[in-house]
Length: 279
Image 1 (cartoon, rainbow, N blue to C red):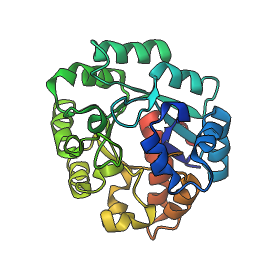
Image 2 (image 1 turned 90 degrees about the vertical axis):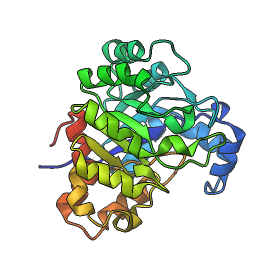
Image 3 (image 1 turned 60 degrees about the horizontal axis):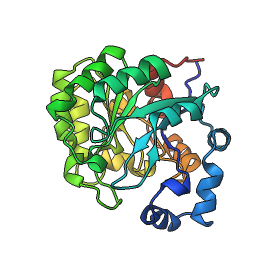
Image 4 (image 1 turned 90 degrees about the horizontal axis):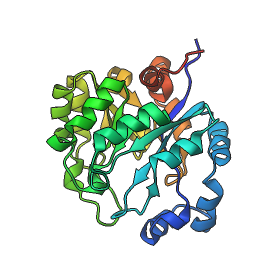
């Protein structure tokens, strides 16, 4: 059986919808002018080309509405259109509770009418705690529809981010109150809370670590029991804001853990959550 490689964390970043502060940060590690770089990569064809170069079979493409931080203004509708007729690209919605009066209704519509396969939640960028009871109807929809809810956890370099909202401990309430809801901890509590994120994953079978933004070669330092956690660990690159998809895949392939564990991290776990085929 061949296990697919899945990148669970891909963005659409046209430069005209990204604040200068973010572009200036990206310029520190992009070797060409960042505006043309992002413009060139903001097409489905460019994403698929990078996936092919990196040996990635499927990619999760994330909507994001973050007007007070990064300036990323990519709607769920636009993300679905970006992925249309591209079966290797999987659209996730984004719900910003300050930009809608009906988060749960919006998510239900995105799933039923647009076919999104998951939802990204950004407490650090949108300034709310993930266990806010006002969002419980949204989580109930996600659980009912059988789609993953993915949360930004941990730190961020972007202006106006509020790190306190990124503590994964607040997601413990959701793990208990929505036991059938898949909860994905994007960035695995990067910075302050990798231990907290790992503890939640060990404790609750519906909590998963997603490793975008963590140097893959250091994963065993963050998570010494990575081998045992592999059933609940998901690869993500954060491409193109982190332009290292190909290198990150290779670094995971080089980790001193079993081939079975590497295959789960690189795609087996994500394929199971997304209902993707194993060839």
